[in-house]
Length: 138
Length: 113
Image (cartoon, one colour):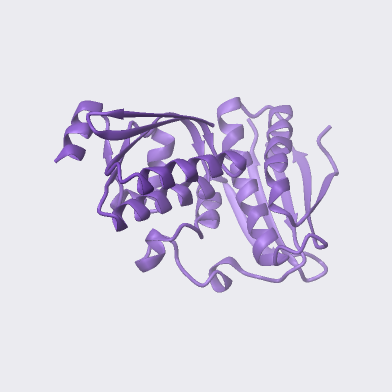
């Protein structure tokens, strides 16, 4: 049932909360329990926020595309933006170290990596950033 | 997210519940911290006992509040962080800058020192 779902959003922070609700609905439909589904939605939301900021430079004309597919035992999210950035190289700091410890920003990737069971940054066939997030299904 | 404020033993106690995540609610929390700083109420005890989840934006507001208070000579302590929130503090190493308590009386006594 959860195959080939595609959500395209403009790069605008105001839409992020709606994405979280969308992901929670998808997760619940896939059978993830209510407590874990918030973790999934926050992980996806952190990735989307970074795609908006680092991939698309906050330009509302540029879209972030979220592809969702369920497979036996796993739910897969592919999150594409229009950039070609890498989190460790392009974010300019390591959260939790030095002055970054008291920064009010820059913890999204760290949180997403710890919440998601699998999170990988790569490129899509067009050479743009693609984040693959996989959540196990029981 | 719901925010409740009260002054207890001279300490501003801010009680949060629900999800502390990106969205308009975070602006309200920022305002509460700004009020605490501007009113020079001194120290803040932030009760997270009923916070289900927090994202990086929520953490950012807490760090900003902590920093703003510290700049004015105040302190912020965290009360009753749930297991999930405590894990977030460990992951992000914020556990090294936040004072955390599980007993309100103990927290208030510490903030009155």
